[in-house]
Structures are given as C-alpha cells and as structure tokens.
Length: 147
Image 1 (tube, rainbow, N blue to C red):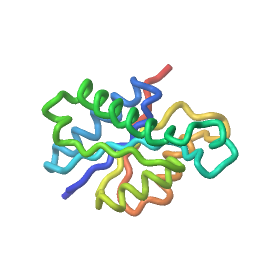
Image 2: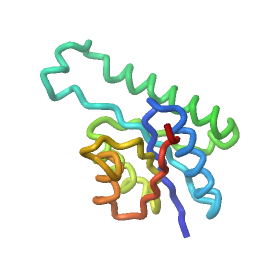
Image 3: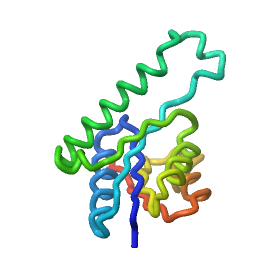
C-alpha cells in the first residue's frame, strides 16, 4: 500500500507537467496517499555565477517558484485537491534533491516526467534516469507528449 507519492515537476513544460501531475494524483488517490509535489531550483550560491545575482535572489526565487507550483497544481488538479498537497521547492541538483525530498517525506513512489531524450540520453532524460537508478522506492516515469 502506498502512503506517500512524490511528484517531481520542472515548471518549464506545462504539457508534461500536466501529464505528470495528473498521473501522480491518480496513483495517490488509489490508496488515499499523501501527494507531495517538488520542483528543484539550480544552486548558484556556491559558484562564480552567484556573483551576478543580488543577495536576496534565492529567497525571491523560492517564493516565486512556490507560488507558481501552487498555482499550477490548483489549475491542473483543482483548488480542493491542491489544498491537500505539500508543495516543496528544493535547491540543488535535480535528481539529488528529488531523492532527498523522497527520503525525508517517506515516499513510497516517485512520479517523474521524461522529455524527448537527446542522443546521449537515448532512453530517458538524465534526471529521470538518475532518480530511477538511485531511488530506494518505486519510480513511475511519465513520457511527455509526442512531438
């Protein structure tokens, strides 16, 4: 029995995010599981790139991303369903942060999207492949819309 489903969305491809969110919600609803939705921001704080941003840039990015995440979840799944979702914005490397959030939440299932891969990532995108390879729980991959 699944008690917690973690859904990872990118917020850059609404069509894929819609498919991933809907599938994760269906799977969570099957067992009455908690649905958590995560988005990962890149970490510019420890590199030379951070010098190009104001000191409060990260906090503002987290705040805006959280609002966007809540808005998209409400739009796709409805306000009532959205009120029960835990929205998480993490910072770092996507696959590592998804795995950390899954572990912290006690997720039994991770639902991720896979975009049309590049030649070097022929079967899956690099983040989806790494989540699958390193996850300690089951992972369900939702293929993005066909071009």
